[in-house]
Image 1 (cartoon, one colour):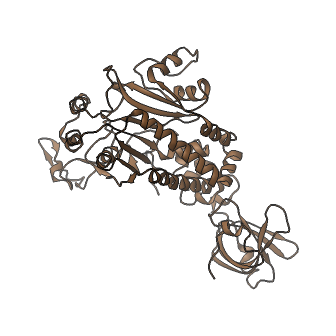
Image 2 (spheres, one colour):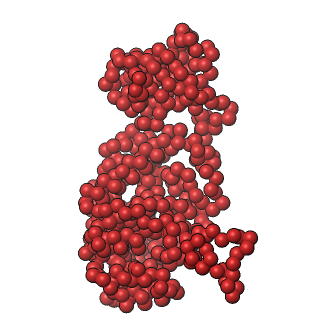
Length: 463
């Protein structure tokens, strides 16, 4: 018999028909009337399916009453209308097959209350809890919605390199990739001789796919990448990961205003999709994680994002009378506390801040005519702060070269990137959205380590 997923069974379309369901036991309680109630979940939806198992079943005494949370079973039986409250349908079991038992003394996630911190140490099984099952389903929906959004708008999906010789951000916080023998590292005049390494030069895990996506946008008009990126930043905050996923679209013949329009449209598309298609999971988050999350998301969707310059933002912050930990001085980058003040106190809606000082932004951002700022933008949302960073890209080769040199980098590794400014140069723009930040935003989860399946952080790569 073909398996029926619990999400489909709960729709109630097969009432009084025999079905086969499979999953993991969430609870089992025994009745004095000679039968047991099993709550079964297979991950296809938030809700469990109730199974009624009569004590007359052949394996009831030997196996069914030994089923504890975490046990895996298959149940063949009749889907019937539920006689009790809490569910509309249930299955009267004719057969229960046990795939695997679970020791309740060792199975930590079967206990009622387990902290998120403890669950991070159990990342291989935490998805079986309500919270992390819901996070995973929402994350999955956001990923699909991302592809839908860009595909519907004529963007091509590009797989950009994970291994690179270039530092896109110029920050130097990169993981080195090498096959050199650590016990016999070759040296030339005291320096590591990377010419003998696998790629013949120093290579790293990428911090961004942006530069590569620009190449394809400058030939296909619109392109995007959605892939893993890496930062060797020794940070243990609730906002940072060493490995995370980025969505980076790039548009040819576009300026900063086009970039901001796309970013606002994209965020609203993701929110609309999750609210419409993940209702039960989102209700769970609203009830147990953040009691204002549904209200916040609805408000963001209904709002026109405020757009103001960095200079105006600094002026607002300076005159606010608010006491900040970090100074609000022109030339300093905005901190999360500043971003949240703008979105939660000053405007009470998302804000797109533009035209940042050139000295605090990356080399590839287009310099404005004032000589002090660049055509950059950050999209700020309540509770998170910055969720998207983007810019119009510098299309003047001389200015690009000057910025690369200013940041202490060599021109040679960027020869191919510089070529884009020589051969059919066009204005173009794009942005990057940290996928985990978006999952945090829509679920209300406080720690970024709880919205990625297996978090990579300093001194943590167990799974």
